[in-house]
Image 1 (tube, helix red, strand yellow):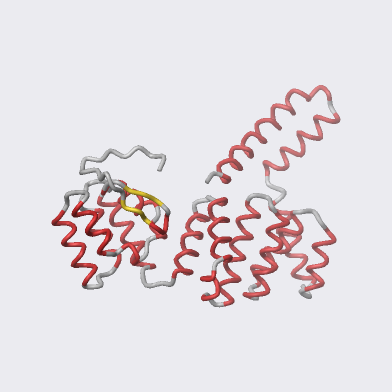
Image 2: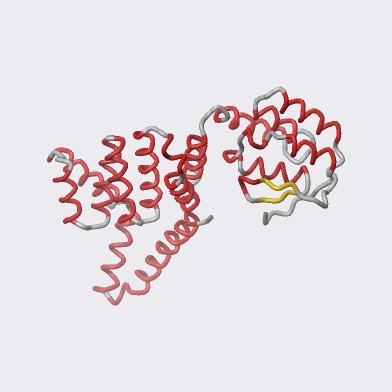
Length: 277
């Protein structure tokens, strides 16, 4: 953990090891931090007598340990167990606790594969594309991927392709969208495949997939029109105009350089933000 956490409760000399995260925690606050920030990694494996006994023995919380052990023995829902821990130390706000338990309630009865996909989808929604790519690729590489329906596996490949495309890795995106379409047969995946090929400016690849999947002329025209509209945004046009001025009109050189620098700086900042882990 890189975040400084103020712990007002007891600290343990002997940490509790969270196997799913390969992480040692030394206090209720650290355990709460882990649960709040890794909610999609939580599973019923967390509900075990070893954790309850550690809380009672090492953190000097016998009452809480007894309550948690009773929940484990009664096979209580995961969100109830987590709620007891989060409410016991004052680290999380009531809103954070409520939001976390609400999320857990949506997935606690789902399979491990479904939870992993939900976590990756959440990272995508937060524009954390590098993290999302890691999660999707990990899911697809594990045996758990064999338990999900073929169409859902296709959706995972589709989302992975979207993450690559957001980072301008169009070659990787094309492979993912191709795999996605083979498995889910969704037009959206096929369209994204062609969008990526067009954005890569590789006419041969674009034409190959048009031929491979028998894409109609009408659909091809729609694809080309969509890409044309997206690449004609005001900022891109401004950038192109500045480039033309830079190479054709020395009197506008300084102004053109200033415009190009400003636009590129903005693009660079966005790209760095999207690449953050």
